[in-house]
Length: 84
Image 1 (spheres, rainbow, N blue to C red):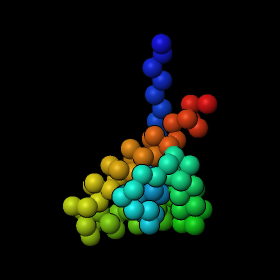
Image 2: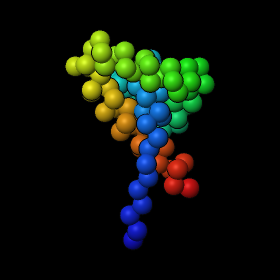
Image 3: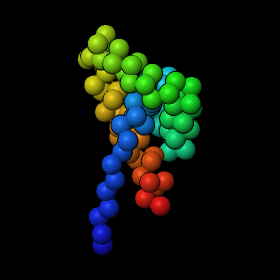
């Protein structure tokens, strides 16, 4: 059995991070992918990074938990698409 890993593009997690999607609830992978796509389409990568930086500056205590959530959810949601 081969262990395949992939590098998640950080902008995907940033897009989920700055979206208005709540951490509560069990969002399926399709919803995560749609949210990331919609956020990137609306804001673009640079604005996603700018808004994330603002959140980290204003509320670092909550930003860390949210970015960890966003990275984990994006990695899970994007893995099938990136592997195939």
